[in-house]
Image (cartoon, rainbow, N blue to C red; front, side, top):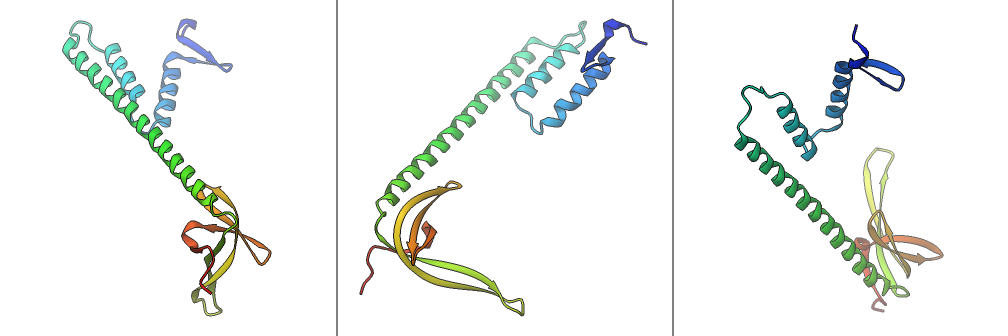
Length: 171
């Protein structure tokens, strides 16, 4: 039986320090699938904790590990910065496209609608039809800009790739 100095109580459950540490280590390794800078630091601290005090590791090895840790942290920060810049550029591209599409409001529009049907024999056929209408708005759905158009009293959300003509057609 362990004494009270070697136990810990969490959520009303008392357990030995060894079993608590094992359960916490299992939780930490289960949640992280890749080594990150925190895992690197934990490995280094564990290495320091369990080294032989009569034969410690050379200081130059620790300096080399700290240099690797610093490089890892800098690479992580650069990666996060590039991700943020990429998001910013994407938002700018979308804003410019929405601005350009907004100039289409009130214009005549022609677009292609493709539908897929399965006949009684199980054959899949694609039918394409062309619709014409007037642009009434611009929308962004799931990060994809689309044009809102009305034709014969119905409202359609038209993807940019389906537009075949903007403006009056040749009579």
